[in-house]
Length: 56
Image 1 (cartoon, rainbow, N blue to C red):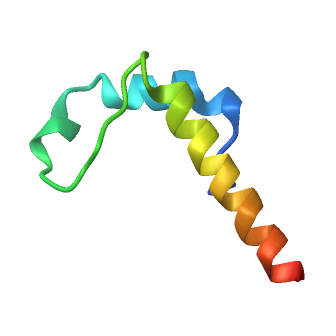
Image 2 (cartoon, rainbow, N blue to C red):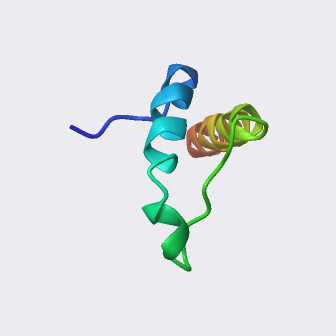
């Protein structure tokens, strides 16, 4: 089931990236433990900004 990204998803995202096969895809950007928090924060901020601009 798909749902919006949440901060609590970081461990699952890192686990999925650890399988190694994602690195074989040229269009996939895989985050690591040092950047996953910033990635999620940026994604959530972008989603919040889109929602705010829709209300204007």
